[in-house]
Length: 130
Image (cartoon, rainbow, N blue to C red; front, side, top):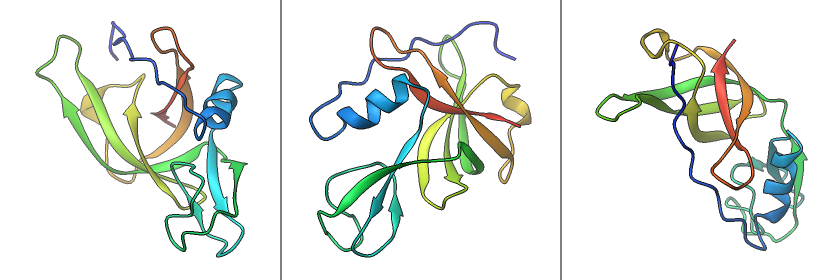
């Protein structure tokens, strides 16, 4: 396990992402759902990335997923892992894998949602192995 935590740059919410970051501040990971084609997507946005409809809404994700792929960054003062995690609901998101031994991360490994504080902004969704 890492003994130090990296400083996470604060996200800058805008009109389109404000609801997402407000939910993150409450410990909820939101994904987009298109009411026209029915597909789920991450990151949430006004237009569906599949059919381009503007009939989208937010829905809460379960917080469970699996590691699709990852990379460990070691040439930094505090090593860290970035990954694509496929959520139980289907969408894949880029994130960090935290609170674990970086040498034990594996593709296909089950992970669960955790929120890490950012430097002066809303908490950021990340994942830790189950």
